[in-house]
Image 1 (tube, rainbow, N blue to C red):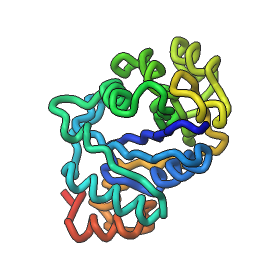
Image 2: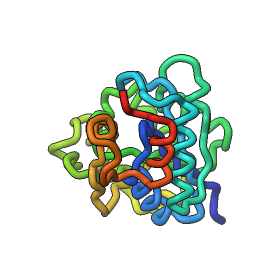
Image 3: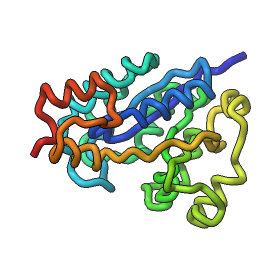
Amino acid sequence: MSIKCILLFGGTFDPVHSGHVDIARYFCERFPACTLRIVPAGNPWQKPPLFATAVQRTEMVGLAFEAGSLSFEIDFQEINRQGPSFTIDTLRAVRAEVGPDACLVLIIGSDQLLNLHTWREWTKLSDYAHLAVARRVGSPVSQLSVDGEVGSIFFPRLALARDIRSTASGSTYLSGETFIDISATQIRKTLQEAGAQDLPVPSRVLDYIQENNLYRI
């Protein structure tokens, strides 16, 4: 019998871009019949202050993933949470919500995997969810590139999607496809200096950015 499955995909989405949509689509295809839950960050402790408001970032997320014809829901818990946003807190909250048997899959980029040892209580993430990593250009995933302690946990736990789909947590998954590393920082810089010119941003999101005069200062 199939168990409930939720794909958790978090980020600042400042702004959301085509790379986010491509990654989400990839994992939805690998883990069919799973609910895609987008988690916009509230106050990410490892990143500089955000440019767009929580409402604006959430609205852009909705426009991007609707345009990508993906079925999804938005989780507002990090936006509503007081203080810094920590992924471990989000996973604990979702696990408490869905119970011990549901399959939770946390999607991150390989750039985040390389930095995972700096996350709060990172060794406990697998107690609550599986860890699915999207390979990104410029952030190779290998025994040599990944922090020793992270690698010692990540690589031995690699599993097939079908096996992960039938269990609650504890395994890891590495995408076979490599995604272009699209920089939200560069997108904002281009908008400031040159306006909207061939940006890797869904058209509806770009319209929203222009209508709300975002990223121009």
